[in-house]
Image (cartoon, rainbow, N blue to C red; front, side):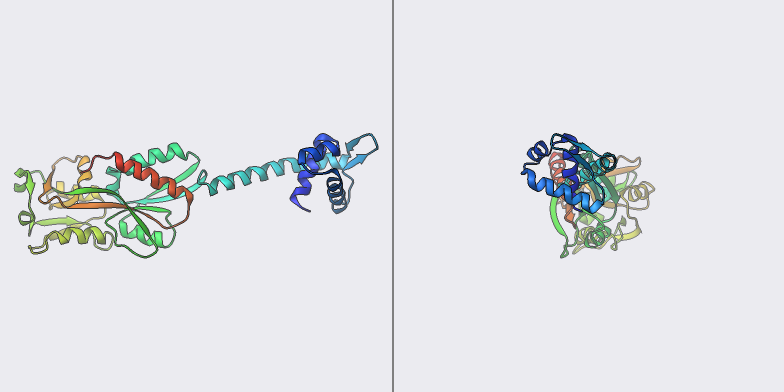
Length: 294
């Protein structure tokens, strides 16, 4: 039994006329008659009562029509939804992002994506850069928003947003009185940074700023920006963070520019062929273009 036989049967059952059914199906009548007879033989029942003047459904044909009509409708709906998944109109997408992206491109990108793909389930995962790289390589993430990642084969990276680095320091710290801070002033200070294991690229970027100077004393390590800022507010030390983080105003934390205006970059990384990821990536591009650079 073939799907087309069932479709032929339903069209004939609707018209109760082989000629008109053949016209709708855009085929000649003899092959349609043969297909229906073959279906009846396979089922072992007569579906249509035929005379020289009329065609009608037998009781078996009527029951068969009632049973398979909703099944074929469901199948057509599934096929349509499957096609929409292939076009990125339905389905699911998993997006990872570093916490600092929450202050830059991510919120607007999410808004744009939900407008354009309301039927795609969006799963958002706050993850560090190195966690995202691992999951992208394992195809557990469709797309990631990473901070200064180490480039690896298997992950396609695209720069989406560049901003300045800033110093976050306790408001009562002597250096808070300065409008801009140099690396010389920061050398040897107590610092709170990300663990190298989870943000190796950003960690290396910050440490490279101190080349030729006394390196910072790392007194605490934390994964999330909010935790780092809380420790800064508590007076445990300073931190160097993306300028967009300054949008998060925390009492007892002061932000100051860095001399030389070193920069950090957000990248989008893709690890699968999910078509919805392409749509989210475009939303990221547009959202990033609308953000005032730090």
